[in-house]
Image (cartoon, rainbow, N blue to C red; front, side, top):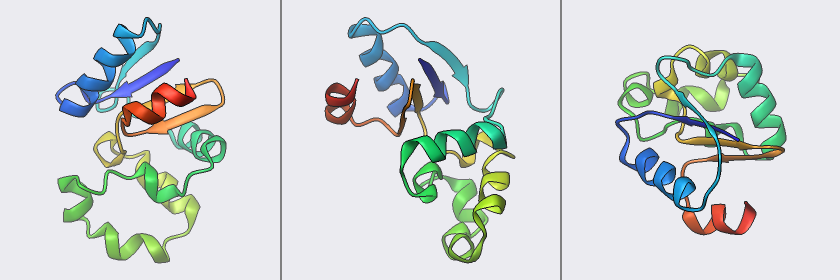
Length: 115
């Protein structure tokens, strides 16, 4: 499994602790120092079955500063993926890649059921 996080994020800390308590082994990756590439994001998005908007950190300052709420609906998917790949702070976190399952954000009940 790949666990992509922002180490200062409280939700990421909770998710990481939960994974460790459950005994899962995972590779840990800092989303700011080693942000996902456009190709990774595209693969995760396609596997997830989620709307692309679920990969955006909609509560983040950068998202709000860039006024992406208004811009994303008119932006082609390819451009959205390109934008996401430019800055890890735009990406909803944590991201957990577990085989063909992709999770954005941490919802313990969902992770418990699907992992």
